[in-house]
Image 1 (cartoon, rainbow over the protein chains, first blue to last red):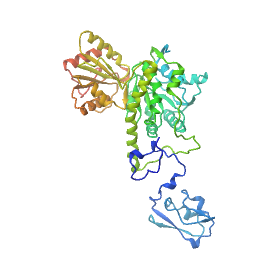
Image 2: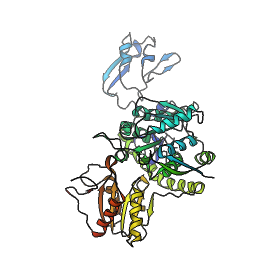
Image 3: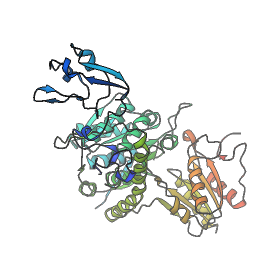
Image 4: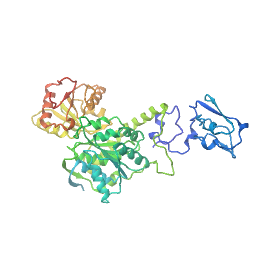
Length: 101
Length: 392
């Protein structure tokens, strides 16, 4: 059974597909840029942020990294631009802008 | 030591399932395959096997449960017929594309409509492009033998595709015939234990089954499946060879019955082969060079081997127990013609549709087909292919 996901990508050959397109690994989405179909993009306005961290658990794609108890800038490789974080932010510290960047 | 028995086709397949003792059987009853889940559930109730029998609410659920069970890591079997297979259709593709080695005992029956419960191959032929291996049986013995061989083919690491083990409704499924069974132990050691490399219940290696594949991946996934189907051809042969060693019965992609020097050959699948063989015997006794070629493996389609076996033949009746409404021929006939065309062989081939909805076909019918082949009478009325025993 073929299980190597490292060769998967937009130019993968059929010989390198995993058997049944299965993914025999956990946490494998870290290896794939799934943010490339984003239409709108959240922007982190750090000086407005009070570090309440309300945005972190509502992100469906775990795209708001937390380092030493503080949120840092978005993980744009995985953010789909859904905008939930911007809605939930009480301080206007996340601004949604049109476009993928 | 072989066990001499007399069993119906349904019971023969059920005995094979009992001897295999699969982990899970989700099933929903439908004529004429109902007896298979019925027998298996009685084996479970009697403590003969420890299969988890799952009575589901529909065939769509039966195949869905089979997909779930097999992905979880269980050796899985189900059975159905006709409309039941049609209701499974969506999930048949899931099973094959997820590369799950499920075995399905298909008891071939006409599809509606008009609604009819009798034998024909319209269910199996309708599912021929679902990515399943398809083995068709002539009689109870072959149905049993194919079932015993099914998992060895399906679970082979170069294959990992589901298998349909097909037999004709009522004619094979309900008629009691003499049969040789293998000892329980012989089947157990031949089939072996199912040890999937990866499975959902393996907490050590979490896995995702059946993820979405965008355009960039879909064709590559299908091409990989096509390779698995191609690989299954060699595995089917190797498993048959090994099976011959324990059973004494030899199986290939097809059976050649007096075809070696034959000018006129009937190519056929399933239970009606016997009538063709009887007619062939009779005509051979009269010195006619006739033969029968019975296709056992329809998927993968043994195109090159068929062309080789038929290379000296002058005329062929390609007989389909299914109407595919192509307006040109029956489904098997179309593939046979393509196979011979690719091999640059151009015998006269007449596509014939027979036995729909359980319509009888007799030895006399087969004799008359041979007579037409010999006389070069390929006439058909109003269609490019011929309907046998239709009133017109």
